[in-house]
Image (cartoon, rainbow, N blue to C red; front, side, top):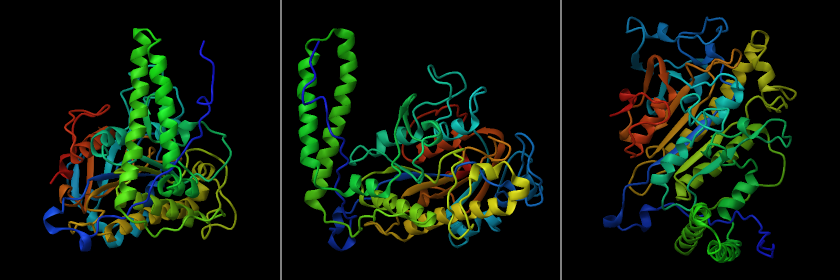
Length: 448
């Protein structure tokens, strides 16, 4: 048996370099290239209050079971499908009023649910995967490689970070499993852990002090691995090939970071203070970090969780309530908490609108905006938090420029898999895949 040595214990590093975006004033006109395509997902936990979010449901009682239909707002159109202009926004969507021509409301999307496992855990962890029920071995959930990683395999090949995972869960208690607090997965059972602390995310993105040490670490590991590989049988060597691939990916990441360091200057973004931040400031700071990572080319793919599913630990929603509140507990008392829940939904939409506007104001070297080149999707794995309704989900898609039809309300026929939207987004990002998860086709009204 091989003995452990100094290489057994390696410090985890998050070093990266922060680079400026491409600037028109220093670009050579003939060398300007089209801006990179990006994709980001903004996830809201525990669903929404339907009467505040969905058109035509303002007078509805709390939906019973997996029901809910928005077709009353679509007049005499086909009862299973409709496309209208997104003219009058519902109360929860009001923060998008100034940019409604750049967003599309998508309703009627159903998420796969596998009976016998927790609803909240599924609606978070399976939101971006939704494999057909009972097709994934070794998992109680229909959880497979998520959309962000499949897309990143193609569009983030030259970025330092293939994907970045942001979470605004400020709680330090671990009362729920990772399935409640992560929507990004490399594959079944292989979590892409999100970063919750703005300082840690800043250091991962912007620190320049650890790159050489990071390279030394990977060199040492590769040296040991090559030595060990000669002692293995055929089957174990196959497993080690996957290990080598992971290490080579780290080496490529380091090389890309070093290249950016040598070519580009430091962005003016101060390191976050190690102090308590009000909830809205905390979410926006994490959002600012996500936007600058997309803007500068540190990554082309990101996921952003506003909060975890089902955790009963209260949040202090400054400006909304005078004491901490549990979003999950409130959702199961919707009859008495309706006004307060609507405040939380509006608060979350304000954070999304803030980021959409921020992306829209960032100009790229080819004259387009960051929003033009980003598919930025708001969504939740529940259509209604009070009844655990996992169909007719609240979905809004912003950005995409001329590649996407915007300013619409697209209501899909009952039973349309959410995976149809993810397949559509994969196609819009340039992937030629024929199917994703349990998809049955694309959402053609989104295509130009």
